[in-house]
Amino acid sequence: MAEIIISNDVDNYLADLVDILFKEEYFGFRIDAKNYVDRLYDFIYTIPFLTFKKTKDIKIGNFYCTYKHSSNTSWYIIFDVEEETYLIKNITNNHSKDYAEFIANLS
Image 1 (cartoon, one colour):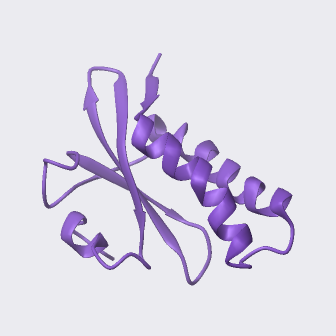
Image 2 (tube, helix red, strand yellow):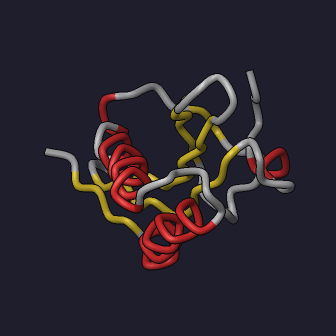
């Protein structure tokens, strides 16, 4: 059975994301921002069953999967795999200025 390990950096980012989404008024209620982040976590735990692609720079992680949240936002979960252990090392989205540096195939 696959094991998912989420790095502290990713875990902290996702925890902060709830506050950011609420404060920036992407969501009118904090619970909606939390539900949004929960869906990201849910997606992360499906990664062993998905097709993934190579990143451009292995220093940030070897592989990535794309979570298309809406027509405007795609999240890129960046990770390494050893046997059946998946280490989630980074997360970014298409609104980030530097996401193209990490992702090899943006289609």
